[in-house]
Amino acid sequence: MIDNKERLQKAMASCGVASRRKCEELIVAGRVKVNGNKVTELGFKVSKRDDIEVDGKLLQKEELVYLVMYKPTGYLTAVSDKLGRRLVMDLLPKELLKTHRLFPVGRLDYDTSGVLLITNDGELSYRLTRSSKEIEKVYQVRVDGILTQDAVNQLMRGVLLDGKMTKRAKVDIISLDRKNNSSLISLTITEGRNRQVRRMCEAIGFPVKKLKRTSFGGVNLDGLAMGETRVLKPHEIKVLYSL
Image (cartoon, rainbow, N blue to C red; front, side, top):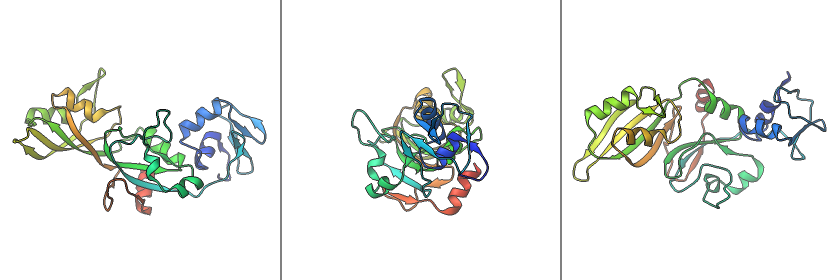
């Protein structure tokens, strides 16, 4: 924690408990104590001298970890699952998980591969998932059918989803496979609606056959094989915080 007082949920996030939103849920649920007293007020502030407990465990500030994973398909973007499905956390070193409370930033669908950020920096996670600024996410999309210029224009202008137009997108056609009646495109969006890319393509009549996120806020898959992770470079962390 820092010298000046800060909100309890922010202090918890900086200790690697979880994202700030999840920390807020823990506070409201009555699972957090400060100096032995239960706190359920989200506006409560603490200093570095205060002892914070979550479920009876005293928090210690962890070394911050920043990873990018090349997420494979067939893995759930979560830290636990009641149905016992495979999790992205299963791909991380067990020793690292024993010493750090890591969690994925945002989500990638079960059947989508590509760039996934994993960290224990709850403040960064909060910034990236709750920011009102535009964070570019680039996807490589294989769609069913030969994409027309009219369809490309629709994606670029925006598509109506749930009664609201999506923001303008960037579209580049990588290849057209007339033999197999499919198209490969690069699609850049700045929003994060649920299954947005798939729904956008379906809305214009070109359902997605395969989807991979190739970049998130400038972080890409360079040097990674599917299922591998690497530590983010200092300049990448700096750029993400600037977003």
